Image 1 (cartoon, rainbow over the protein chains, first blue to last red):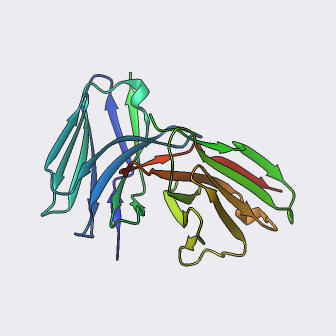
Image 2 (tube, helix red, strand yellow):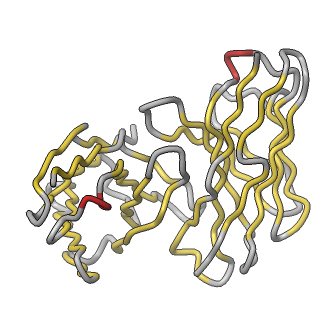
Length: 111
Length: 116
């Protein structure tokens, strides 16, 4: 069945790079997404990548996709305290728009 | 950018009452809206997919008679929790696909429901 896995926690120092990893099982994914959730808030779309791409960069964010290994990563350069949040990866399987979410990775940024 | 709003942002109700939550796309038309439920420190669980003008499609295990969904227009979907009980207390989040760009799904800020 469909499954998306993430590590639960990551702690980094301010100014370092953060790398959040995600694995998925369904090879028919069309798009893969990264969302950010701050306490008590909804989800903010950070970036997404089409399944036939390997990499996408958007300012401090770099997404890498290894389709063979079904592995997705989000790299945040020069991590700031304001980046502290829960990060969810999600895969979209078909044209219905339905998303399957990972458990979320809590990023803690220490000053 | 695309904005999705939810109302109310939080609600406290007595057991046995019904609660309606609204989800609106403010600056785009949404042919499809989604309703999720999130428990503390957990991921989002898709409850149902709502298409404008048609019946919602519910995920397995979600009671359609308890969670009534109406998608009356291209900018509004509502979720009504009927005869709410304490176990229905949760964070409910809606999202919407932009009709003009279905690649992306935008999320509302969520509604915190507490049933006493």
